Amino acid sequence: LKYPFEVTPLPYPSNSLSKVIDEQTMNLHHDKHHQTYVEKLNKEAKGKKATLYTLIKSASKQKEALKNNAGGHWNHAFFWTVLSGNEAHHNISPSLEARIKKDFGSIENFKAQFEEAGKNHFGSGWVWLIINARGQLKVTTTPNQDNPIMDLAKSRGLPLLGVDVWEHAYYLRYQNDRAAYLKAVWDVVNWSQVGRYYEEAKAKGYK
Ligand code: MN3
Image (cartoon, rainbow, N blue to C red):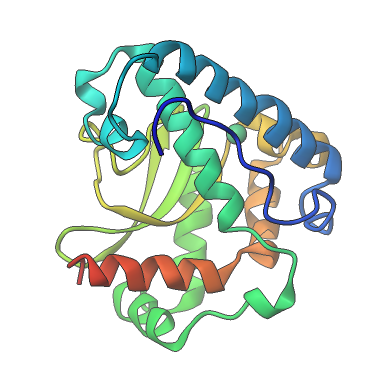
């Protein structure tokens, strides 16, 4: 992805996650919030030839506004792909399940750690499942629109799953109850896609 950047349509109807995330939230989130990050990113990135991934990876060298909006674009584009209302996408692949059990003890422990990290993250940000350069799965959070690919992240690696914990992601239905949103979101995680990101990361040497 390079300048000019654009928001692609959601990969599913905006009401298809409604058992967990209501249609209005999805429409506002995709059509307004994500769109605004992309518009601001295009102002900041005008004339630059670098890919979105390169801009993000070198975040510490970028202007604050470019970093924030590049992260906003990457994070949201990623987020849409790791959600699905389709039950055919809700099973964890055997290889990823085995890895999660190895690194977290059990799926339940992993989910509890992920929810706890997201709940305790102060202010706006994201909670992630990443695979780091040593091939370990880790749960981490990032502030604002930072992400674990950025060179300035406290815990770096490739994201396999990311959940937006900005209030705009959950406020209409869950109000201030971020914990309830995080507990509910498992019902719409696209584990098929998360499993593909895991296989892609292994193919890149993260194992
Ligand atoms: Mn958001």
